[in-house]
Length: 198
Image (cartoon, rainbow, N blue to C red; front, side):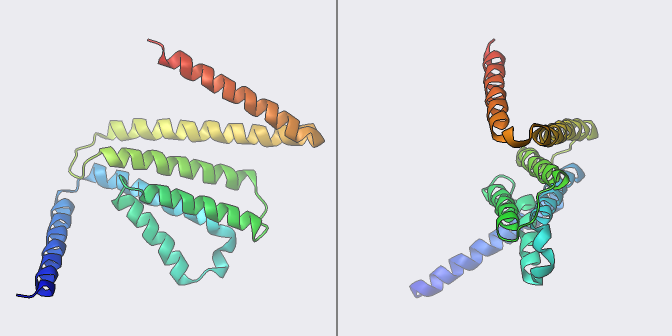
């Protein structure tokens, strides 16, 4: 038997094993795990849609399908670098629509993108630790969702306050933003030090 034939047989056997494993995982998939992975898909797709929305009409079907495939891979592979790649794709889309296409940044779009990226990250973290066949109590998912929505809500309040504050100070925006940012970093560092103490 030639080396090529042996390698081909090994590749076929490996693919068959992968397909069998995928079938077994699909058969054991629980509704709670499917809901968590569905939330990863929904957040990834929505984050990419918001990031690339201004150039949406100009992109073809292939580019839109690529974004859907990336969202699907994020849901299927939450423990891999796929999540990071999807987040980077959304950030690159956000920057491109502003820099290349001159899209004006609105507070609503900014809050939506930030919130969706956070929800993508936290739902992927949850999906990474929930096995495919885990029985997840609805109470657990509800607590997770309420906590995530609270963070998104606080982010929205902070973003609106920052936008209103920037308009109120006029030309001194950069100085105020620098001082406020420094104060936030010092406050966060203090909070982390206090939280680490036994």
